[in-house]
Image 1 (cartoon, rainbow, N blue to C red):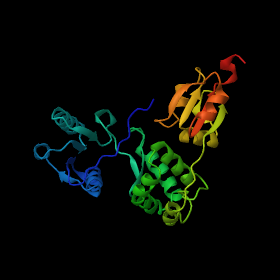
Image 2: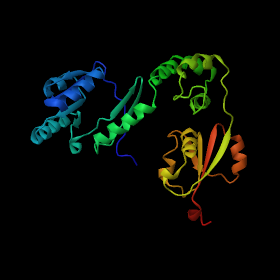
Image 3: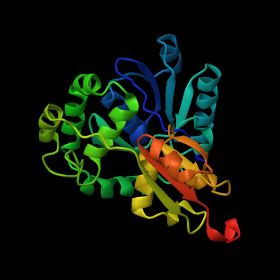
Image 4: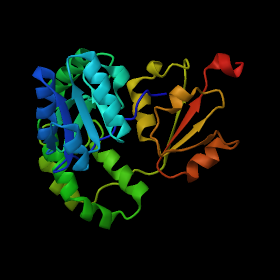
Length: 270
């Protein structure tokens, strides 16, 4: 279970309230202005303009609590700097490879930790990711025309974007390869079936390859004792069902990648 749902909110030309003084408030103003929002420094004027978000960065607890209550009573979602208990939403540390954004959040537990995770990722994820994202967006129409079926289209993209693929996001020059990839007959991965024999109910015990299989699976078959935490590592839109009685025959007719999750031996009485 996750404590909060990460969302990306479009703020371009929209009113956002930022209350407070000092470094904390100024940082929030810069952040929302960077997202294209129109900043209002007064609660009433922002509400009148149709704002839906309020950032509150008062240094005094009493003022922060009072303005948070007023904003929430007016139907706004509230973020109060350094006061997680007053927040309806928190602000992640953002790695910017626009239009690709990576948001790292801790639910208000430690902004410093989120920042240092972002700094590590900054060194790994190349600046060209934004170029790759824009190139893929520009080619969406051609890809949809060639592969009208969404599941098939997803499999083609998975094949191209996987590690070592023609559009590997971490490889130099992937963005420049998009045009050629779109012009070629992109291969569609045929139906495949892999079995993961779990060693425990802890998802952190999955190998990198097993985690990748789950992340790409079109279908997940699982033993009844497999923990929900393991199943949560699969794609949200992957079909899920108990392992069929005739597993081999069913796998031959399943499209895309099927992952079979077998529970740890001790849970199956083996």
